[in-house]
Length: 237
Image (tube, rainbow, N blue to C red; front, side, top):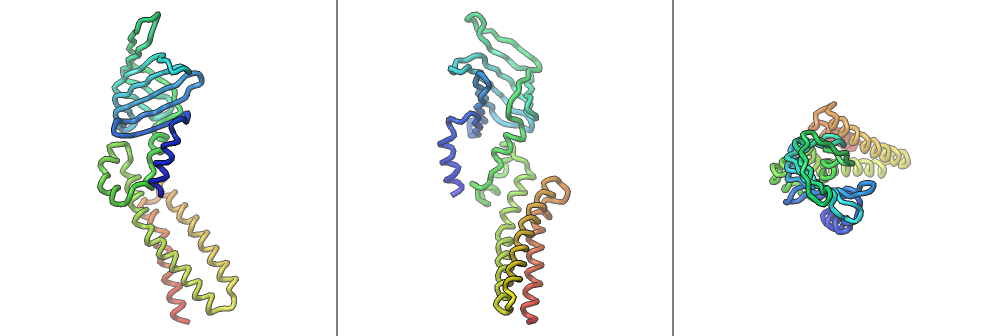
């Protein structure tokens, strides 16, 4: 379903003002300016840089105003800096070439924003992430994020198993006691606390306050601990 959603969304993304696409031909960006358009293409990302970048500035009628070629451009922030840019522009009907060592443009995109657009592993299986790890790294994905996604996928079955175990424990206790309302309330509170604890733990891992491995697996460990206690209490009764 996630793959179907991505394919369907792409069919309706052709006319939006801002469009980013990454395929075998490289990175393509369409950006709307106040009184013009900008088409950006690059061969590949490399750290904070785009390699072999080309920019076409068009007016509202899609008429070419100028084009910019550069070996690389730093896109770490919204002010892009080009190393050795060549600017091609028509002056009195003649195509003039101007070389600028440190040329800059302002864009709505930066490295983090572009990178975040492709940080969606919902359409990839666990096996594909393992087998295409090197390709993802070449395309600009961080190794930390790939490891995070792998551990998330591995932890999901255990997380669901222990959540189901807790639900079963609360159900068994409800059958043995008349105070059902109290147990149902406790169950809801545990679910909410688990949800926030999972998000908090992941946030601490992403900010490097705790190791990412521990951040992802700590909710699973906590749930297994409470499930074990619950099973012991049922056996004692």
